[in-house]
Image 1 (spheres, rainbow, N blue to C red):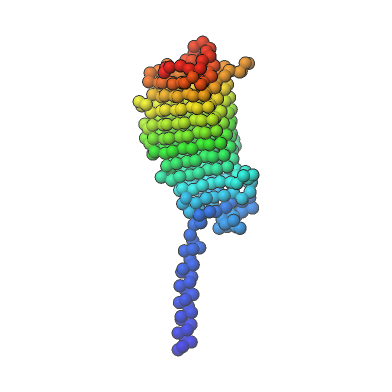
Image 2 (cartoon, rainbow, N blue to C red; image 1 turned 30 degrees about the vertical axis):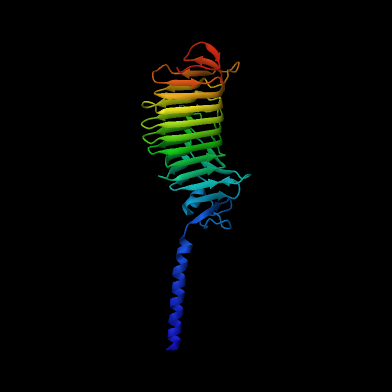
Length: 320
């Protein structure tokens, strides 16, 4: 009997240990990894990394971090919770989207998503780089985005959200009606900061449409150049819904530097816009509709047409 009791005790102890170990094995990790040599059947640890961002995002805990170990393409990803996706200096973490697809889609209500050090490329009609449908905050830092048909970064939300885009380059988003950065709000207020951003060779650089919410945007230390339609296109949907501040920004060789319509206001300080001989003349175009206002201090250097008028050179003006 003693042997039987001892055996039963051993079995019970082993069973309890197994139960206590199971949750730890199933728990999502706060930090996971991807690598060119990884496999999506791995647990996404540093020693056994995953192959794709999607597998890693699925494995990480809410608010955790996905890190690329080496340079490779890690595939498109859909994000549904707070997460950081990043790569260290010297590593190129790429996402190449196929025709009709988006590289990164964010459907994460009330979440914060941070994208750092990523290279997003479109191939043969890929529609967008980053599409932010739901979330409370998105940060896009040290990224390069190019060759998409519709948008480089598309912020479209019906809830309040904040946006930070910093040290980022967006080029060759050049399809008809395409935007390097598009911000549309359908009810929630959007507050956006763009710092040290270069938008070049696109159809439109920045396109803001405040449908039934408000957009407040600050653009600093940035270059919005050589876009084939316009540098900045602002359109408000109702009274005082679209306010943009530019500080230390260049707008060079955009056929229309700034197009302003529909209850929009813009504030200019240390803004430089110049025409280039032999190339399409630039223009600051403040649309002649009502309820649009342009404010400027004496630090600006602007050349081009104002609402289709004669070429002017000025450093300041009063509200339109």
